[in-house]
Length: 145
Image (cartoon, rainbow, N blue to C red):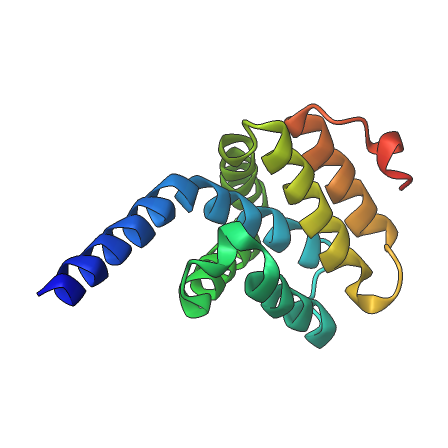
C-alpha cells in the first residue's frame, strides 16, 4: 500500500507541474513555430533542434514530446493557413508564457537555438526573434543579434 500512495503522490506532483508549465509549453511551441517558419519552410535541422530542446529543457521535458510537436505543428498550420491571424494567435501564446524573467529569457534562448540550427540566423528569423523580444519587453541588442 505505501508504494501505491507514493506513486499516486508522484503522479499528482507531475500533473501539477504540467498544469503550472502549460502556458510556457504553448508559448515555447508558438515561438518555435514563428521562428522556424519565418523563411517559409522548416528544415530538418530545425525539427531536430526542437526535439533536442524538448529533451533538455526542464519545463518542457515533463510533457510528452508528441504533445509538444502537435502543438508546434498546429501553430505552423495556423500561420500557413492565414498568416496574420495565425501569427497573432502564436504571438498571444508567447505573450502569455513570458511573465517571469526566467521564462522570457528561456523563450528567447529557444528561439535563437531554433534559428541557429541551420548554422546561422537568417534575416527572416532574426526579424521574428526581434518581434518576439519586443512582445516580451527584451532589447534584442542585448542578445547580440
